[in-house]
Structure formats: C-alpha cells, structure tokens
Image (spheres, rainbow, N blue to C red):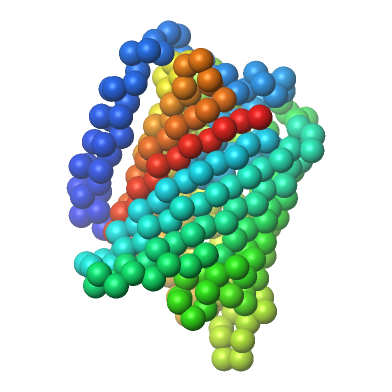
Length: 277
C-alpha cells in the first residue's frame, strides 16, 4: 500500500473553504463548548452527533439531504443528491433508508440516474453509558435501485454489510468508529463476488453550542473481486453548524481526499442539511 503525499498538499485549498465557512458563522454562537443541543432532545446518557462521511452509532429520528461532488479524473466527475431518513423506534434501535441520485459527467457528456439505495438496521447498548461509551452494531443492505445500463449503481446486485460500532464521549470530544464486512449477492454469470473489510472513524470537537469540527477517516481492503488486494484510505475534515433559534436544523460542509495510490476519486466535497425530530 502506497500513500500519496501529493494528495495531502492538494487538499489545503479545499479545506480552506470549510474554515472560511466557520469564520462567517461563529460570532452568533459564542459561548462555552458543549455537546450539541440535539443530544438533550433524546434524554439519553450518551447521544452522538452525526459526522459528515461516517455514520453515528446513536439510533435517531431525522431526515438528511446531502450534496456530494466527486472529482474523479480530468473531464470526469459525479454530482450526487442523497436523501436519507432514519426512525428510532426506541433509544436502542432504528431503521435508516437512503437513496442517491447521481449525475455522471465525462467529457461534457452527462448521464443521470438513481443510484443504489440502502436500508440499514442500527442497534445500540447503553450498558457502559455512564463511562461515556456506546456499543452497538447492525446490518445494512445495498438495494438494486441503480442502472446497469447507465453505469450508475447497480440494478441487480444486493450488498450485505454487517458491522460493529463504538462511540466514546468525554467533555467536548466525541470519537466514533465502525468496523464492517460486505459481500455482494445476486451476481450475474461471469461476475466476480466482491468482498470488502472496512474501518471508519470520526473525531468531533464541539467548539461551542452551535459549531462542531470534525476529522474523519475511512479505510477499505478488498478481499475478493476485480480489485482484490487493493487498499483505499480516505481522510477528511469538516464543520457542522446548528442554526440559532432552530437548533434541530444542522448544516455541514466538508471534504476528503485519498492518501493511497489506489483511489475512487481525487477529492470529494459534501454539503449537508439535517433535521432532528
């Protein structure tokens, strides 16, 4: 596995956008750093905020809208709108669904289609909540809502992805991590079975009542399939802002880059809006 340090240098300008965003909104929300207001909404000993690229281990009730731009190569990019909804049946479990719409541009020729959706079950245990720990896991299913003809998502594959997660909270800091294994099913004749092991992590700092800063990481190793043996590591940074007077509404801005030679994009930017119920 080779790490591309050129990518680290290229990210400097991208993350400057996030810091400019922060400087324009911090003033109305000065005050002592603390956990986000949505934590109190759930009346739980520990409740974790939502990172931008990584999932939260806390079952929640929310709707979220994301815009993602991925620079894939010269004259090659993806623009995606993703809608996500999650409903917590109790503080211990929830169901989440999301569906993306992607516009793929290659040499100024644009193709648009619905991508592969996802349905996930999230479970959480509060047995160690008094120590700031949340233990959990679940299983996700990638559903074939994409288009094989247009090359966006898949119209036949079903992905199964069980996972374990861990969250730790102390003062203004939150650390979450996910470990997962995924396998593709319903393959057509001649298609290789794809398997991946993945690790994702997020470090969040509550700057004040409204502002949260994040560092995020994703590492994936392909166990079987066309890219068997390849590793991908993406790192990112971002900011989230709770709107004063309507703090259930959260805006986010972030970016990430690959630091390995094998990569899926050159850089990716996310703009997010989330509403808690």
